[in-house]
Image (cartoon, rainbow, N blue to C red; front, side, top):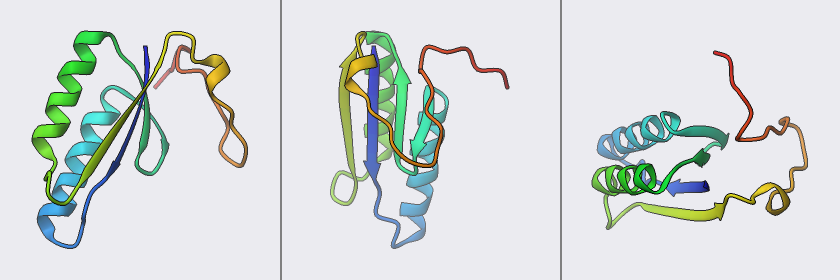
Length: 96
């Protein structure tokens, strides 16, 4: 399923900057960054639970926020893209 993950981390102190880097690093391991704090991740239910647990363990629940949008398997008609960055399909093959 396609999961859109967004986060807002308070970076007023060094701990916040560290949390921001850690959350971004976890998300990069599972998906594609589409905005500064927005990732599209193709996950099965076990991966989703594991990533959610990792991110919640990193965040400061008093200062930060995480949002998970579950777009499911039929996500193609739920996404519209306008603007500068080129779009992609999360199911496409990436060559690094």
